[in-house]
Length: 257
Image (cartoon, rainbow, N blue to C red):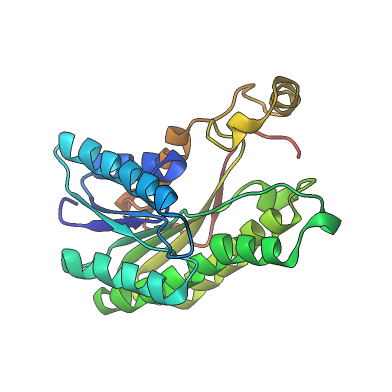
């Protein structure tokens, strides 16, 4: 597996970083991606790049190989350039993990048009743009693994997250369609739906809210980013060669939202 290449979008921190590190440990060459856009402040982009370069150093310290590419995957041209650059770097693209995503809680009637559009573009459209570009490379070799990072919110909905739930739910139908259309070409497409994971997002929850959530989780704890990465690692391995169009919930047995 040492020659295979994996692109992980949004991999400068959090779940994306954990996935990149685990796949590097599995022997993949990793293409790291961080959010880069001329519409954002230089300070933010510099911070994003610095985080991605730190992940690169960690992979190299493990003895792995990686490269860093900044791109706004919510923009079709940028997403296509990212995928093409990833495929050209080492002459192939075997794995695409669509992980890039954002969240901003808001009751439905207070969600602005811009907020709705931004969530859908970043969480759903980006997966379409990157997958469309990646399939052109995977079809030629008649093999490939695509994993889309959704959320349990996309399965059951959640108060204050209509736009987030819509975007994450959209990934389910999208992934199952990709699985049906490209299974005959040796390409699998699956979904990993994390529950409440220790991350920057859940760090914003207060102690009372966290306690209520954990009462609904069978394992009585939040998950770790490594829990999610482990599911992705399995799905892109040869052990999962006959699994496609499926949703794996990494949620500790979350009973309800």
